[in-house]
Structure formats: C-alpha cells, structure tokens
Image (cartoon, rainbow, N blue to C red; front, side, top):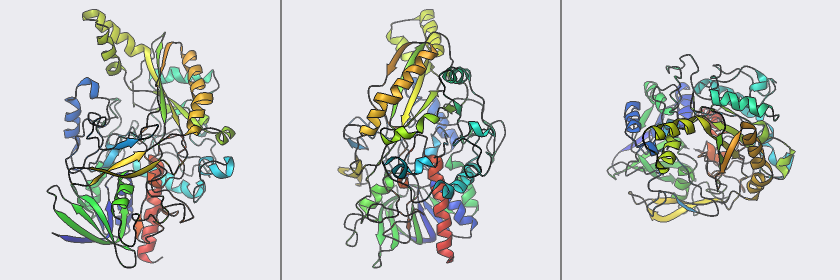
Amino acid sequence: MTTSTSADVVIVGTGVVGVAIAETLLDAGISVLMLEAGPRVDRAEVVENFRNLPLALKGDPSSCYPPAPWAPHPMPATEAADDAYLQLSGPDKYAQTFIRYAGGSTWHWAGTCWRLTPDDMRLQTLYGVGRDWAFDYATLEPYYARTEHTLGICGPADPSLQWPPGGDATLRSKPYPMPPLPFGPGEQRFTEVVKTLGYNNIPTAQARNSGMPYDDRPACCANNNCVPVCPVGAKYDAATALSRLEAKGAVITANAVVYRVETNAANKIEAVHYFDQNKQPHRITGKLFVLACNGIETPKLLLMSKDERNPNGLANSSDQVGRNMMDHPQLTMTVTLEEPYWAGVGPVVNSGIMETSQGAFRAQHAGAYFRFNNFARNRFVTVAALKKGLVGKALDSEIRRMTACTADIVLAHEVLPSADNRLTLSDKKDWLGLPKPAIHYDVGDYVRKSAEVYSVPIGKRIAAAMGATDIKLSPKFNQSKHIMGGTIMGLDPHDSVVDADCRAHDHENLFLPGGGAMASTACGNSTITMVSLGFKAADAMVRQLKGV
C-alpha cells in the first residue's frame, strides 16, 4: 500500500447524489473525503470537444466525454463491439449511457425533474404488482422540496400544471424557486393539439435557470445543447458544486477507482481500496461509507468486494444486489408533418403528458409518459437528405423542410422490478483488470402489453391529430439511461438490500443511496428522487454520527 487517509465519511462518487450528501455532512461539521474514478475537467474543455465532433455524433450524450483508460464507460463507437464496457444479454438490451467524470452524469443530463406521485409508491397495495416503498410520499415530500431548491429547479406556480397536480400542501410544501421556461413553437402546437384529445401537456420541472441567475449559474439562453453539455452552465450539474465543497473542507480525489470495500470482524466497513491512474493501490478509512457511484457501478463494486463473511458480495445476504435492474423503456415515434412545428427552440426537454402514467389499468399494464422531443432536428435529417443524393439548393431546401416538418414523440414506460433483470460480473476485464458489468434484461410483459393496447395507440392518435403524413415507430424498446433498482430498498432484509434510509441491511455503517434503491420507477426521470433519497440518507448519517 502507498498512502492511508481517513475522514468521518468516505463517499465513492462525485455525481449529484454524492455531492448532495457531502454538502449536508460538511454543513453539519462532519469531515468528508470523496473519491472519483474519472478525471476532473472544466466546461470549456467539454464544450470544445463538442464543437469538434462530427455532426452525426453531436447528439450522443457521451461522445464529448472520452473515457480515461482506468475509468471506462459506455461509448457509442465501441458498445456493439467485443470490447464493449457493458456486457449485455436478454430479450432487451440494458444499453445505458453514463460517464465517469468528476460531477458524474449530470454533465450530460437533460435536467428533467418529475416527482413520483403517492400512487407510484404503492403499486403492490393499489394494483397488486411490483413493490411498495418502505415509506410513503409524505415522508419523501420535504426532501423533494429540498432538492428543488438545492438544484435550482424551475417549474409552474399553477397547481394544475404541476406534477403531482392539485395544490394540496401534502403534495407540495414549497413553490419552485423559479418559474418555468416558455414553450418553443413546436411544443406550443403540440400542447394545443393534444388538448383536443383530452390530454394536458404541462411544463417540465427542470434543473435549469429560467430568466434569472441562480446559485451562481446564468439564465438559460436556449442553446438546445443541454445534451450533451450546457455551454453556459445554466443547467445544474454536480461539477459546479465541487469547488464549493472544497471551500467547505471536503477532500476530493479524482482518478481514484475503488475496487474493493473492506469489512472487519464485526462486518462493519473498515476501508475502501482504490487504484490511481498509475495502477497504484491506496486504502482509505472512515466511520461511515457511501457508495454513490451509480446504479451499475455500485452493485458491481459490492459484488467485487466479496469476502469470507460475505461470500456473495457485500450487502447481499438477500441475494438482491444487482437484481431488479430497471429503467424507463421507451419507444420513439418519428413523424413527418404537413405543417412546420420547428422543434429545437429552448431546452431539449421542456414539457410532457404525465397524466397517462396514472390509473387503475396499472394492475394490467404499465403507464406511459408522452413528450414532444424538443431536440433541434437539423442533425437528424441531414444524413437522410444526403442519402437521397441531393446537392446544392435541393439539398438545402430538403434539410430546411425536414427540420421544420419532422418531430419525435417519445413514449416512456414504467417497468416493474424483476429479480431476473440482473447485473453480474463478466469474465471480461477492463484496463485495470477489473471485471466489466454483465447485465441480463427483459422489459417484461407488463411493458409490452402497454405498448400493444395503450401507449402506441395513444401515440398514433396524437400523431394523426398533429397532421402526420408518415409515422415510423422504433422497432424495439430503448433505454432512457435512468438506472434504477440494483440495490433495492425494502423493510424486509430477506428481499431487499437497503432500509428506508438507504443504509445496507447487512452493514450498519454503509449507505447505498440513489437510483439503485428505488423500489418503483413510475414514468418520469429519476434524478430528483435519487437526490431526495440522498438527502434522507445524509440526515440519517448525521444522526448516526452525532448519536441522536
């Protein structure tokens, strides 16, 4: 071993969940040491990478974040090859996108922040499917409000336009800190059209500054580059908080790949071990430990850390670590329209139809959330126009026409936890000699039936009302890159990994907060719930360390 360092709390991962926890602990006078597998970069470097990308890759979330050899993550150019980082199998591919950089995947997220509803947390009780959460919505609500103000989330003041809707103080205890962003022309027309069908397209709550500075971030200037990077920093990303954490006393070590979590004779966590970028090992001790890597890297690390006391991996006496992998399986309906809609003005995701995610039908099939994808269309249609052999003015005219008169409607579904949707350790190794994650995945009949009898028929009615002259539906479910379930929460240690505070049932000083703990997915993006769980876990850590 080389160096040995210590802190009250050691946090593995510097993404949004780890950052939220770290700041809570630091504000309580607790020392924090954070380990990040990947490098630490500044925004200018990422933006320059984006500018230099070929047009076909500019929409890819990861292409301007080249992985370090010691911290690989999925990349579009390699994931179909033998050297893919994610080893995937099953009827549906759990093809995720995440990055291992300081600040985590909020670098390239869309910023979307839909809350769960009370019903979303009681699927088993209400509909006889899935799992119930270990606590109710009322317990989570104050943490949602805290997350919205910490991340700087903009959203509507009108209760009928909020999610969950209604205006009841039990559903929303505080207003959003900023008003919503205005709809672009395509979203406005979409909103008017779906209203004729009885659906409400409401503003997306999103971690983006709307017309005013917030938390030292400027206002959104509608670049429409939120994915893969906000060039001005109007959108929240965890990287913007790292300097603030250091000013409060946090120690942040980048290029530190944790490969083993060490237990002692009492089966408490004693230390974590990491390799630096030169493959040199280090050992870090602490009182409490947090694995906030992400929903893939955290269960992978637990399985890698098996020892004589934990032969199936840490926190895994239930055999649930790596099981119940979930996401939001989505279908995309690309439509050609009679009249221009002009997607691409403002943020890439700015509105959605959420009411279609709720109802008694959930006893039989999944709910779905519909959105008009507000990504600018030019990069999508240019290649198609070139394939037609057009040149000169004809090419220019076709690109302009298709940019204005095509659109994507996304149908995102909830999925149920299943023990068969499982992450294990591959026999294939990465640059450090560590096993790559292998994931077997099937969206299940609950989702497939929804597409057959519910979501696709609704999507087709919407497309017809928009004036679609052509509809192309994606042939398979794609992943939304919302990684959930691999360290699932529950009250019973025999069928879950963590308790209501995201503390491992098996190890009293190990916390596993974030998407991996989520017991249901609903249909909306998971980040706001992940961070709220992080805040709840952080409060529990403060109580544990201070003996209250």
